[in-house]
Image (cartoon, rainbow, N blue to C red; front, side, top):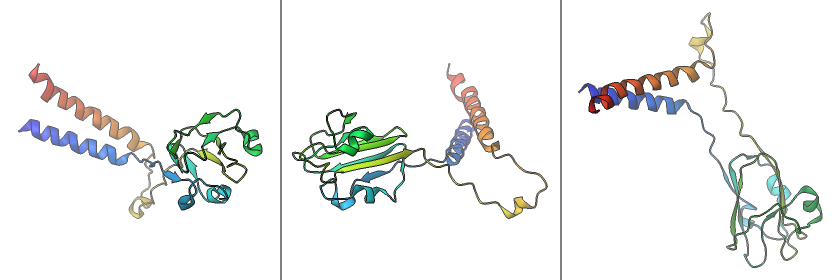
Length: 177
């Protein structure tokens, strides 16, 4: 019975610890929205109101035999030169993804069929995700004469987790050895 209670305590502590971890979910962007990766679409306008963050994905949909997706440097982006690509993101299906796993400027063009000259070029800046917003102050806490460090939960929870693991180890695992 004590083991069941201990296991329940461990589960509760683990859930509390997981609840304190804030995570920004990666986003999948369909380039061009419903116009996809096609000529005569202004991708500068498409990207201007968007924020691209580390671990986001760009999803390109296009005619596989007519266009492609390659990454070039800024100079080759401006001149639509596809001769020395940094990366070729095309996989032959016309449904390609670019994982934005580096915080930098990405310069993407279509090197086939004059696509770049027809506007098939995209320049974006990938940034670090923003920090989660600070919690709103609690009115009852505002009246207190002391302040609690913002870092306190970061240290208390791991200690509680290690203590629970230690208890579980001592009471559940070791008796079976």
